[in-house]
Length: 330
Length: 254
Image (tube, rainbow over all chains, first blue to last red; front, side, top):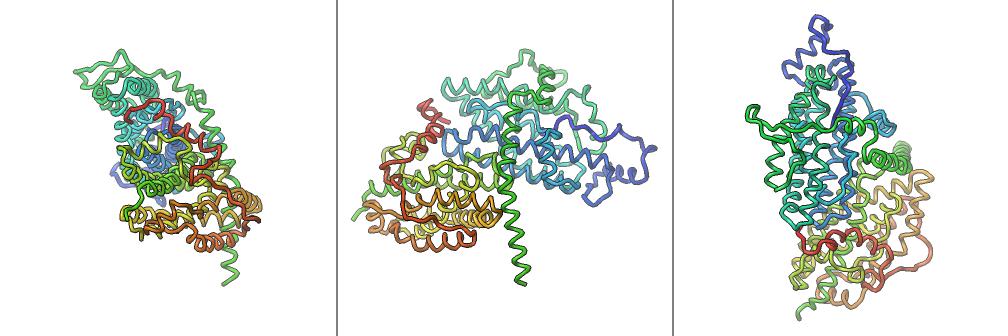
């Protein structure tokens, strides 16, 4: 889940009596699963909330290239290197679709980028954790992409047409990403003692940060109700987290790895696992900029943007000259 | 007369090491490009080059006949065994230098691959057939970028000219020949490198003219990569990173 803690731009869910005729007609469409398209009327708060959500998702794809890129030059075989390159390329592509979806709401990619670089917009907390050994690349695919899929599959049905269509495309690629991550974990977990140690180490470090990807507990999640009424959020944070744990624990068992949670236990009554909550104070620290890699990630993005200014200006200047020459020739 | 397998191996290593080393260099950009479309394009280029490496080095390992794989050749040889031209191991520098290096390589690659599709060795012809399509796209893209930045702002022009001045002395090595090339030419496996020069000059000349860039004076040419006589200092550093896991955990499967 790449959008966390999205602040809904409203004061709470309006009752039908409080809605204007336009708002009421809008809500009817949503309730009847009719997609909202860019030219349709929409409440300003819906538009602003979606910009935040899609923007944060897009930024996460872009920043998410960095922890994986950290291992491209050290990938241990040609095939692993090719797969990782393809995956990171897909992620940049996802960023591109999502920025395009956000642009249909009246904000440019450059504006969104500037908001990321000056800290007004966020990206998923997960990308502020380091990738320290090769199994981390497996864990990112297995756990991080696994958690992202858990959220994004329902978002294929989200109410905003361009976002929903971007999600459909993205989900297809994400399931391939998750499979390749699990495949790395299999190799490592069944490999030499050192490889198994890397796999366990990766799971130890990525388990709780992956659980945090779903956002704070429902009881502390103040922005959900309106977003759910608008169908830009489909499930609650806790529902998705439970589903993720239930799916992932048997996979860890199959790998012969230990989930780092002493309280993890199957609960027959609820038909799911009981598990420990992540340390939410750590989550809020990461969101505030104090995660292990926040500064490195932002510095890398700022440097890429600043170092690239001459390239963007150069290509723009050339395009303008070319257009001018074409006009002059006509 | 049977083809000298040692010379064929040498030729295949030259092809595969070029794409391996350049693919690695380009992959270093991941997540750091000036604009999102370039991040995608650079990753795509690196991916194509690594894919070509798998074919060239895979065939090389078969010809060598010692039960090794493409991965063994990529990850377990030392710098003196590498047969890539020096051009591709040079550092990325700024985006302009990376794209100029790419263009100077793509122009050569698109021409030689096209010729190799008619190789008397069916495996070489087959690999070249696949790679030629990618190379044609790469050269189109890198030409456009060299033109765009050469004929862009004063600063982009200056940077592209500096990149060309630095890199052009490494171009000559692509067209040198030795006994390996003579044997490949003789057997119809590969063209004489020198025979590609006229097409190369025409292509590069046209793009540089449009980019308002000029070739540096003097015909000096660095060499030593494709024969393995002497690489630059840069290659060893690249290998320490590229080969680290394979070297630190010998025999592990990944």
